[in-house]
Amino acid sequence: MINVSVEFNVKNKEIKEKLKKVLFRAMIDMHKIAKQKCPVDTGRLRNSIKLFPSSPGAVKYILAATVEYAGDVEFGTTPHFVSAKELRDWARRKLGDESAAGAVAEKIRRAGTNAHPFMRPALMQVKENKLKESFKRILG
Image (cartoon, rainbow, N blue to C red; front, side):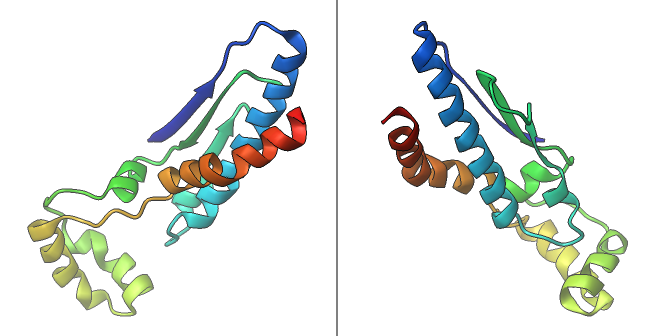
């Protein structure tokens, strides 16, 4: 599982309410971008990306990809054994040839898997582009 947790603590009530709006908007944007950037095979990874809580007004949110292999997709893996049998369906869907599963398994055994980041780019895109825009719009 991968998650990004964001929270803040501000004393001024008016500013705190506005910051809650900025934070919620940023998390909604990040959720949308992460889903767009997420590589898709069966859709299981994309469908696992959830925002907790999913309603405005909180001072802490967690955006998580909850399937067990989410970190392997985000960061890639080191070389490891995987059975060609386990890759047959994937090879048929993605490569159009289930017999390619053996070659893919061998590549993973020798080199691991490449990273396909989707959460980190979503965070960076919101941080670099959308957050400033939200602050201006909501805080004036």
